[in-house]
Amino acid sequence: MAGHGRREGLVMEERTRRKVRVGIVVSDGRDKTVTVEVPSSFKHPRYDKVVRRSTKFHAHDEQNEARMGDTVRIMETRPVSKQKRWRVVEIVERAR
Image (cartoon, rainbow, N blue to C red; front, side, top):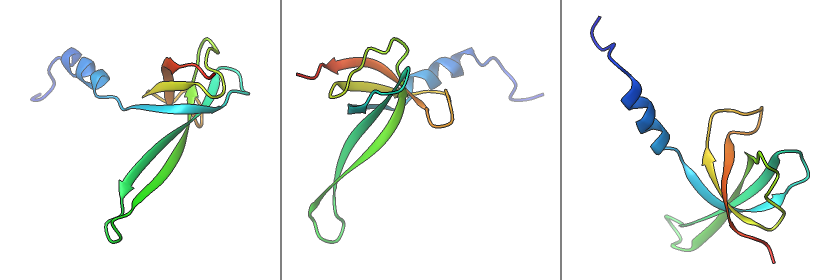
């Protein structure tokens, strides 16, 4: 069977290519879950104006450390629940 070799190298490569985003925690009401709003901006192709948008991600926070207003770094992971596909990697900055 051709193409069925060892896969250990492939698994380690995949872990390094996970998406990482930085955003602000907008909700921390649920247990071990935070909602993180990640802003993005791009130049409109026709009107050449900067368009600002934001996306909300549900992220797994195992120790319940992140609080509302904190800036956090989240990383893509396997599905933890119906909506959670991200996990909190670190708290970049605490809310003042």
